[in-house]
Picture 1 (spheres, protein in one colour):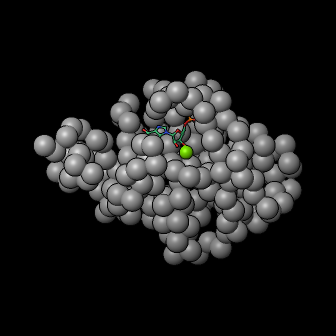
Picture 2 (picture 1 turned 30 degrees about the vertical axis):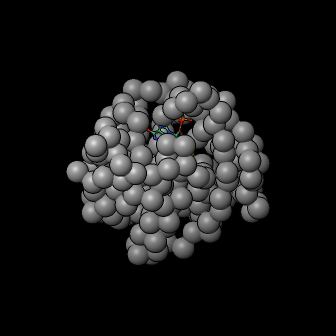
Length: 181
Ligand code: IMP
Ligand code: MG
């Protein structure tokens, strides 16, 4: 078991498994024939997934524009609650097909909020790609069209995802188990 910061990390998804799934996701996205596609990565947690997925999108022949939005969900501890924009996109979404990329779909508030914002600004369509889906935690009626993996109801870190801004650098997705001693 990898030890990082003196903690044992149980690997849930290896770097290889994620890379293989990213290419499949890119093929699923390509099959949709989006028009004037704008990808919006929802920062911060999606930054590694988005970086890998857009390169897979290139590999399957897509040429999206890429934007970033920094969204903060302010809830206590590891629970997400309300949502607000900390940094907005620069591009216009009007008349365009938009693909939102996030790390985890949990309650749905982050993605639902961003989707509403983009539709309100005149996007032609909004689709959602997430690496992980914690379905059992959903509070809003929203689904992602492109899901990397179903996620158990555990707090995961790595591959961009953090706990208090740590562990984002892990090339895999894991769960912190215990002190390595
Ligand atoms: P939602 O708004 O409840 O759907 O929460 C989704 C956001 O919460 C994601 O974008 C993540 O940044 C964060 N999040 C949810 N679960 C986890 C987790 O297990 N590890 C790290 N971040 C998480
Ligand atoms: Mg996030």
